[in-house]
Image (cartoon, rainbow, N blue to C red; front, side, top):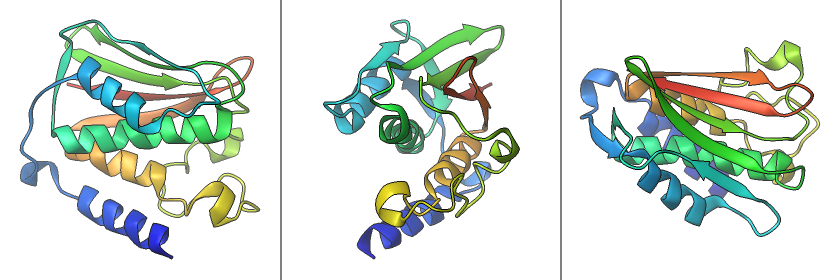
Length: 167
């Protein structure tokens, strides 16, 4: 029950509108390192591929929360399947942040719903094994509050890739 309440609180806090969120330059490599220290598990390998000095305009805690939720999910569902990569690069006028894993991915029919509150790709999962279905909804609200976009796609031959784009 405590975990559910904490997730609901996080979701509520993340539901800020972009006008309410004060954005500042945030160093991606430093934030990714904090995420790694917080979320990486012993049975998983998380690699950071972010150029030194690359930053985005974001609210630091919301960016951290979004990346932490994505890495936590990747570790939970694909941590033993191969390396998880947290990468970022500048592309024209945007910065693209990607979290990619080697796990089973998500059923194609569910890809459009994974960021919806309380959605679980596998309804048979219990809260003990699959959370409450708020992690990716929190990611979306955090990213959008920082004026970014987030999307997910399956990788070939397997795995999931989540992409965040900041202007």
